Image 1: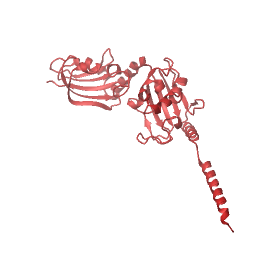
Image 2: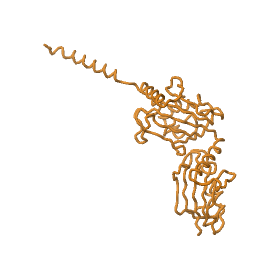
Image 3: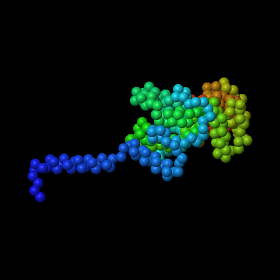
Image 4: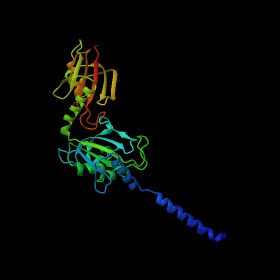
Length: 312
């Protein structure tokens, strides 16, 4: 074969066109990849899910909401779990702060960065203003508070889906499986009371050994103490540990001085039931701890305490 030098540019161009065509055939868009992954996940797990319009999301109502209509401008206690479809990432502990949200529904993204704390950050303002994603699914499908829904969300709807999040263990292009319960504030006490009762039983303790105050605190006095009586104005020295209801220790001290009136309401109510030298184990609902806001170790969290008051 005789190839002249003047034909080389044409041959090179032809080769580049062929290579580009092959690469185009091999390329799969994020949208197509999301759709394939979600369809395969639904089939493999035999799920009964409904498509949510053209959003790429699929949903299943687990419990119909019986509360008020969900509105973006109102705050709700939200408890949720999530996992990537391939199972490499999972947040399943409903007592952890990562699974609890208490803020405006319009600021709920189901991600690490969400809520009012990001509302004034320019890069998030446009995201929060969009009527899409999980918040839209909750408002238009679940519709009412005190309900539970399962939602499959394609990776393209998350703020940082393409690269994932190595620090959290989220792989790139990870679509997610969510289960979300939306409460109204009035339902929190009953929900948390049940959580406390289950925790006491899970610890192998007898519920009948615990007295319940009118404010919802469950307590057991293991040692009354022989020292001076305690009032909310007393100065006491305590040894204590504090836990979330999943057993995670969030606070402790081997020796700390304080007056009960300087602490959360649960301590003000329970400590005067013992004397110096006494020991008490108690569970506080959020209304007697840090409230149902986002403050404290976790939003609207019930807490467990083991407390010994030194006799000195």
